[in-house]
Amino acid sequence: MPSTSPQSLVSPGSATQRDPVPMLDLTRQYRSIKDEVQAAIERVLTTQHFIGGPELDGFECESANYLGVSASVGCGSGTDALWLALAAAGVGAEACVITTPFSFFATVSSIVRCGATPILADIDPATLNLDPEATETALKRGRSYQVRAAMPVHLYGQCANMDRFDRIVEQYGASLIEDAAQAFGAKWRDKKAGALGKAAAFSFYPTKNLSACGDGGCVTTNDEELAAHVRRLRNHGSRQRYYHEEIGWNSRLDAMQAAVLRVKLKHIDEWNQARRMLACRYHGLFIGSGLVQAGAQPVSAQAPIALLATMPEAYHIYHQYVVRAFRRDELRSFLTQQGIGTEIYYPVPLHLQQCFAYLGYKAGDLPESERASKEVLALPIFPELREDEQQRVVAAIAEFYSR
Image (cartoon, rainbow, N blue to C red; front, side):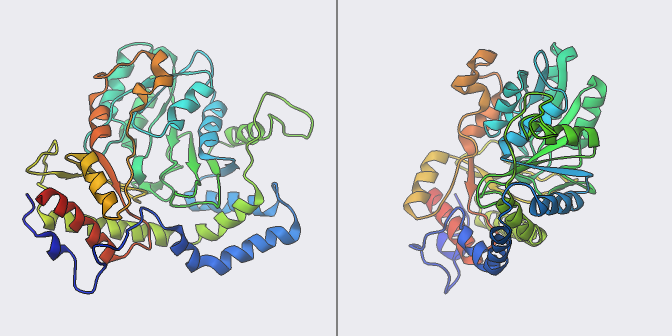
């Protein structure tokens, strides 16, 4: 039971219990950069140069400089970015790629799209990122000679343990491909996500920290040959119009999206820092509420909320603020009734998805991923979220558990 009453979490003059709290409100961000965005769009409309051109070149150069890599190659989506990174790194038929089952569908589907076989290892229950020890165990079980790549996901905006994964890929002679879809601006030690492996994939889907006005993505690398390969693959396997060296794809980042991303890139550090401050405030509110007990695992009636761990080497940019929750589904229904937005990332781990049944996994094979899927709940977080709205969220959660 919480030690603090729900009412005490909401300060005088703050949002009332009936005020909705959205999971995400992009209109608030747009109001702050409206003039910049409209000017960028007008540049594209004036030139009528919609595919490639100076806006794409500018974004690729500016994002590469920001991330500390030699090349950033824009493409049509984060999903395509994963496939492009893997394919350009030489992953194909007969290969295996080891990754996490606790991620968005595209993490594993991109491996299958390459003709390769996914090997799934369980997650660290503290961070929910791919567990290096589970990865090594899976590799030792067999088929390690076929493993061409390891693809950890920087889940919710926190980098996986890249020190350990560097050692693993070196030992097994594999490539390290980052699924950095949720981690633009995150860091591991002094390097940004996107500069930590052979290649990385980012998504600019509208919900991401750095977001386009539609779909978009990019592949980053310090390998110029790999970057050139990605450029061919995104353009039908062609470097010269109407001459095709291989079977590629139509996956180009259009100029309109690139222009918008150039505007938002200027603000990403400020927005990520705001997310970090919001996460710190959530931490304080939850600890003060009595809903959390230090080190309490698993969640229970006595400690119904568990906060995820942040590794000291990681600069977490909180694409999502996720907690573990006792009676998660009931809590979510209650919050919905209170007008508070939430989401579940992810309700079914990938090894239990029907389309991947052929891989041979069954319930109980990856228990930490399966437990997380029953407990995780993402709470509202975006740079413009107000303090009174956060208080409202935690007060409502405290109210649910006090009943």
